[in-house]
Image (cartoon, rainbow, N blue to C red; front, top):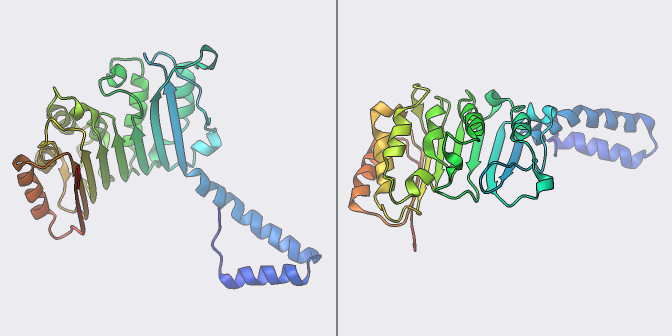
Length: 282
């Protein structure tokens, strides 16, 4: 971790070391200066963490975390990425679910500013995301992170959208990639609408950046527009009036999607700085 110092100070230190390589006082001053910046540098290094949770096909066996988090590191984490991976585990490598949870729960939830949850290789129709299954404590852990009063950025990739319901007014950036509760061809946007309406935190969220990637929802080309329409409903406690960045990715665009997009653009006309619309093949 590089520490920014005034150029003049760096030159003076280097010049003194070159001119007097055996000068005890110069070496001592350099050593003290280095130690003074060591702890802040370590704290900055610890602010970002990535955790991969590996489990077998029936999600009854969990592997030990490849990079265990110590209590000291956990207290400084502000940005965390958690990825769920389904894998074939050797019997010798399995770990009790409680051990995995004990490690994760050392993290100070109220310090988290950015949370990325990636479903990884977990299948869309997997029972892993059903709240009745064993990993319900894991779901609760994710929810507590979303409830962080410091949370400003939430990214959900191939996971249910229901975790949005726990977010508070500090949230400014929302990114949704391949929402699995919308990808299933036999489910419409009811699940998303239900999760927004059933928000645990009823404080209004003023989003500044919104990214919707629904290219996998090929059977429902109107889905991105439908999601925007749901977010536009004032009863859902999310406002797009202050959006500065809107990014939409879809398989194709339909007439049903155009109206909500137009309403969104009219609503955030004064604040919008960047608009991106991506279609497959373009």
